[in-house]
Length: 227
Length: 80
Image (cartoon, rainbow over the protein chains, first blue to last red):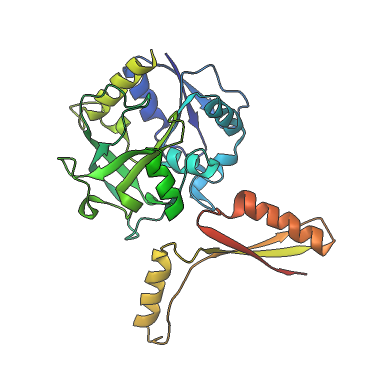
């Protein structure tokens, strides 16, 4: 299975996701933002970081970079695209997934482990997962998911919420919402469910010695789903 | 020709920075403030000299890049 990770100026989780993808069997290629053509891929990942120094709005400049035209075409033709953290911010700026990510409610950069609940397994990313609650890492300043009430209704009606912030038992409530996100939303899909944007970093949970194994479960399952 | 654009957050979008600025002003003794909302201001020098055309060019820029219309409004405020 082939994957591509896009590196923007200011990306800093591109190497981490590269390690994670290779570890679980993807043949990954790093792709520079200024390239025109996406290599043949089964999965494209927009990594975390601070693309273009978060100028203007997080992800806004990166969403207009050259390679994104190919990524948008790839997504629109049904290709799997995953944006993590800054990658999620880039995805909302392209309009591929709905909503926006505002500054965290209490204006603090948050860097900690959180639990998230997978809401919908009818999609290539989460299909066949045998558990619902995952411990992932978050590290962001602008992760406060916001959408209009009309958008929220549409997102919920179409089962587009990918993951919610929750406690270790999967209970979602405001107490477990780290950043003020609307309805505890930590990640969303596009309507067709082939584009996933989420704030948590599964690639930081792929080694028991360093962190945890919930990311390993996610990536092992993902490559099996794509095969 | 110079065209300016002001980008503001829509009314129902939370503006935590504006809130903190409001609190700071309050602490400094500015007690007569109802609300503070923070926005962005752009001055764009365009090659176009026709005011209408210059404005509509900047409006296009606002729609496509400078503002995110999910959360922000834009106003083209002046031409010189």
